[in-house]
Length: 324
Image (tube, rainbow, N blue to C red):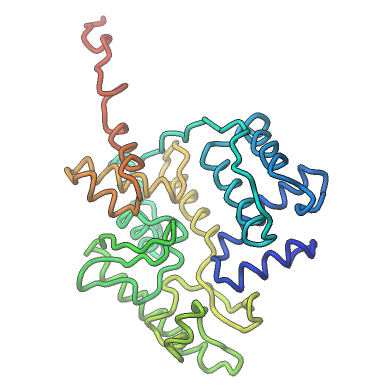
């Protein structure tokens, strides 16, 4: 998996304990960075002081945000406490990052109209769910057929950010397209099932043991499957994974360009727009918080700032002048 036997050992350790692949990749990225910063010394030979020095380096030299520094710290705490089982002192002697996150880019309702006007028909459901339900990119591609409840007009999100589950709204206008997509997934599944080496869709260990054979029924298939079969790196079995996240990025950027939108648009821009437009239409902030899956309402409050005219709702004095 990795050129370094040490990093490969960490990968195997985390995989056996059912960490998500995204978490594994993130932790190993920061652990590798920490090792390189310390001239490739083995972490067992380093101390809490070396960690503090590294965290200060991230702030002073790499100018990372507070959230990024926190992720790096969590990665190293895992390395020492869980993997190496070495004690760490209470680390306080490092410069904490203070750079705040940027205000989100949001499309206006008119820009959203243009965006979907220029969306090819075969991408309208994909992007419609992304904007219409406020999903994160990874939540979108991980959707299973059973997660879309057309009767209750809601989507079930399992193990979102922070490993939390939630329900979010589903636009009724998408229901015909959802049924068409389910039929498409079912057709692909029937083709896969006749392949002698096909092992079914990937499922978490607990579920694969609890629901024997469920990985070959429609309800558990990815709603946006990959165009081709691939080898599961964990088991070596032939499976059909979900579409790649990078494809969602490319689709969004291509559509935004075709629509002539000059803002920098990403999949997360559609999520930001979803939240802002809910508030614009009178939805209360607690409901928006729940829809987005934010742990703290303060995270959601950033969208209220976007809706204010000017700085904190103050009208510019220039607006009161009559200029000729």
